[in-house]
Length: 434
Image 1 (cartoon, helix red, strand yellow):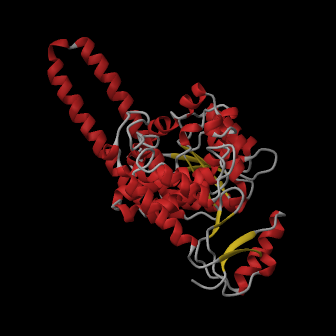
Image 2 (image 1 turned 60 degrees about the horizontal axis):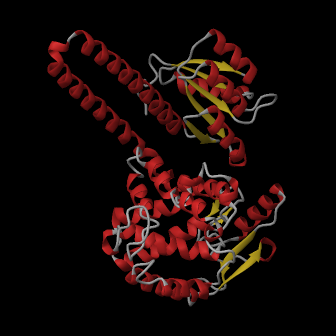
């Protein structure tokens, strides 16, 4: 990205480290931005009182005032500015605060990639420009309708043409997002962990459901975009529970009163609503919608039966119900693997698609007979051992992926990491390389 994308735009860069501020100034000026700098939150707020800007970039960790606190106050002074937070993995909790209170447009991990930073600024400013054009267009439409009723049809056509122009511009913005799609699934995994914490779900439950879907889907004809949408739906299953009262989230589903249970079971519809405006996740929302449909037609919300229910929803229901039975989210006790499989068999033809239930039990049986695994402490790790599942920090940060083969250097880094965070790590590894 070498063109002067910043021509006509001004940016405020805030960091307590002069070398970071200098690096940001060089990068942004080379792309045509007008750059203002501040060596802390207080100085940045004073500058905003005197100088309007189009975008604000702030570090998270600063003395006296964190980036989250600064951006929260900056939003009040400059609500239309695009806000970007620079943070490290250890700042995830504070980053959530910044997202909620500072309404940041995007956060980037340090050290940042200049092209990614410039792409984020380009996207944010482009959205701001399109929103301004949209608002101006709507105002113009209202004025002309009031003054020129005789030309209503002509004006309506102009509005349609302009709307098509805006849609074309939005499509171009979407194409620009292709550069960051590699981070998309990782972001969903982090989001699913945050949703699990809010919903009181054991950590990793949604990712295990997603993994079941990946293995089960192709067995029953779920492939391509439909399979991907169902995996995304598994990761975002708890999205619709964000506004639920704490009591609902800490009580197993079948222990809720009838009315509370009915309200609780609306969460797939809430989740679909949240995702409806996101083209890349709209299909996942449609899969979520059918989560509580039953094969016998006695489910919610539309009482669909048999193959009227989307295949993704039928697959997701079986995978989710198995994993949440194991986690104690449905009944007042945690089911064993055998008990959960019995539940699937007993529900075949009523709660579950018989074909899906049978295939899923087969997948689970194969997994149980696969290469044995063991949970092991870092001190007992040996070079050549292979991870049997993702290794994540308690805040949902992916440290190592499943099937990563450990060597001496990585074992030393894991030992240093657990010493630094003050918490012992446990890893699930294969007893022998798969």
